[in-house]
Length: 498
Image (tube, rainbow, N blue to C red):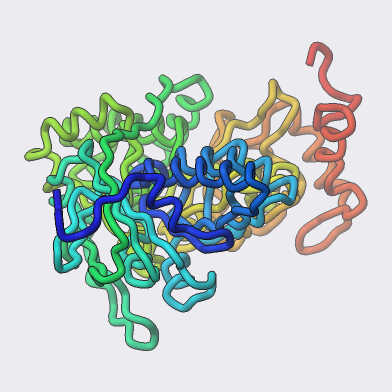
């Protein structure tokens, strides 16, 4: 327990933050995100509002912020948010126009802070296991943009979390990029190469105080793979196996990245269980339960990541066997875990989910119906645009078949057809490499669309105005408009019983 910095109670720390200031949090998802001070900040905001005084902050993080987003949204304490969020209540406030939201590629965020694109960082609130008198900060289970906000924040509050073992520092590899044009090539030639030190740094004079906490935070346990997830995984396994057999992938495969969620967790589990695929490494941004199991079994040789997203059971296994796991896991800042140059150099296989994709290969991962923000683009763009093989997956339908994941044109584009190559639903896998637009459309419809939607999509393609891409601009969003009007993308022609 350091005596060289003032010890603060959470409400004391929160009371130092003023209306309109910009606050940056450590962590990446709930991992590594402070808990006590954001909770106290929500309480402080409610008190200010009850007294008739305004109190809202600008909130910047590495990715989502777990419970902090929920608490601060419930207190109506956020005026602006970036770059990603996963809170239902905050999402509703964003979509009502009550909170401004800047959706950013995660690899870009440290540079936004470095050059002041997002404004001054008034406060950084950072979760750590220890902070030394000379300003070495030993982080917990998520790195995100923490080294950058420690460098640039005017004032810093450190949450010292007794629930996190100091031995997490054995996994950390903390480095920072110099500003351009003085950036040398990043010396990560293998997912398990280390280039930094096990701690972040801060000017000790800017530490306002430390808050002591003991709050373990875990992800909910993952659900067993459902039928759709299992079938998606089977299609991806067959595809990767054939890529190795054909020589388009090396015999020892390439590093794998997978997004967050039950489908991604199921796919990585299936890859690990396959006897047709070799042991592999991961170069990813979030480590999930399946990867703990596969490191234990030896199927995953090592994981480079930015944060954990582990259930209590998986986290406990990792910590209880930390002598085994520490050399096999690297936790990096997101400007390295998501760095386009490193992703391209390593030849990462990127596997991510989307809301929908269109017949020509444009994908929407953020906006329901083209207007309502879901969570944000996160790191999917960083990996998709630079991967050796970008793979997008989604169930072919949602809401009992009322929504098709394959549409004539996505109403919001996060990933253009120039960046996409492989699409997978439970119906099949569409490899559109080397195909012209019409061939791409036919393959995506035949391989990925649900049978109830294939005739509609093929008819649209046949009837559309000829061109390099065939489109009927008067009807291109008929399926989306049908859903708005009738609750089903096929409108009145929906199958009986649906």
